[in-house]
Length: 150
Image 1 (cartoon, rainbow, N blue to C red):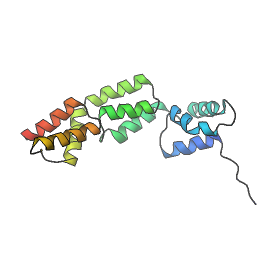
Image 2: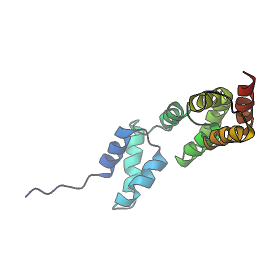
Image 3: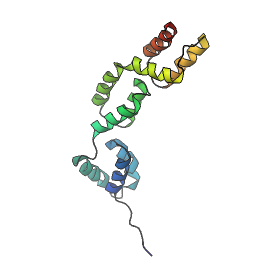
Image 4: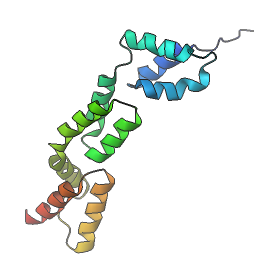
């Protein structure tokens, strides 16, 4: 009768990291319940970070690459903040995203609707949709109103 040994904290962290990039704060949240002795989790994460397995910049770039085409700046900011990334890094990323907010909103709008709304309730529906994706008011207004002019 073979007994399985429990997976180490480092092993659990590596399993999570093999699926996608995780920030240190995310790993701490997910692995805290498995820590048997105080400080063991911090030591394991310090080791992984020193070896380059945990990299905050890669986490940030991963989120931007996966989500920027579908979501607005506000939703992406919230997602980055929830991952516990450095506030300065999040602000820098938001500056980059704001430059393309209208184009990204227009592409999301085009995929979902494709043609201008015929009445005020249709425009409101389109605006609510874009707002739910985290696009800013100015970008939404420009996309929905400019679509009528085309």
